[in-house]
Structures are given as structure tokens and as C-alpha cells.
Length: 147
Image (cartoon, rainbow, N blue to C red):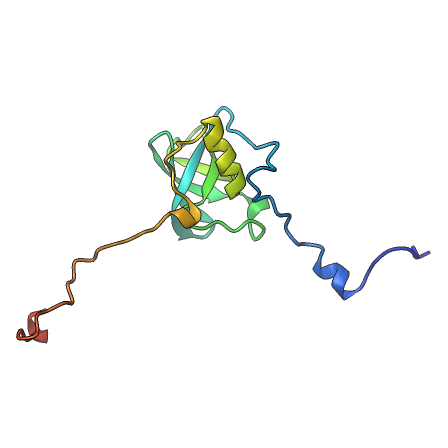
């Protein structure tokens, strides 16, 4: 027999997968810290096929794989802070097991787990100079063939 006092319908189903808001800096009570054979890292490059290049805070750059339970549920971008599980048989490879929110990163900085001068997310401004100067004086003509 069907239960009578339950919510249902279209609106209820839409609210089912809404993520909880954990970005509050003051509301963090428990944060997953690193364990043996784990390291914190910052994402530097998205390689495709669930592979990511991560600069770990122990000084090594590792090619990491997003574990299956995080695929299509947790979206990882460049400059995100993640927890990497280092493989025993391949020390230059690892698996991403957790992505930290901005509130959790603030807590880890306060605890001294990650460097305090680390920039992430909106704080990070990437400026690349490609070497071209498009400003020429008015009496100079630019020849396209010499470029």
C-alpha cells in the first residue's frame, strides 16, 4: 500500500540532488585531513578521460585519476585544492579522493596543513604574456609580411 503523508511530484524530485552549502568559513567543524600515503595538491591541468595533473605540496607533480565515486558528482577545475592518494607502486601517480571547498581550505590554512600564501579559486589571477606588442607609434607602419 502507498504511504499517504509523503511529498512527491516534480518539485520534490528536483530538490533531491541539490548540494549542501558548506562554503561558510565559520561553520566548518570536521575536515578530512591527509593520512599516510596521502598529500594535498593544487590542480594545474585537466588532461581528459578523468585524468588531472596536480602539483602536490611535497614538491612533486603527479598525474592523478578521479576515482569512480566522484565522477559526474564533483566537478574539478584548475586551481582547486584536492586530496591525493599516492599509489604504492607508482609514486608519480595518484588518485583524487576529495575536493576541498573554500571554507575547508580556510580551515586547513588556519591549522597549518597547507601553505598560508596559497592562492586558489577567485584569488588566483593568471596573466600570461605571449610576447606580442600591438601598440605602435602613429608614424610607423606595420608590415604584415614581416610578422
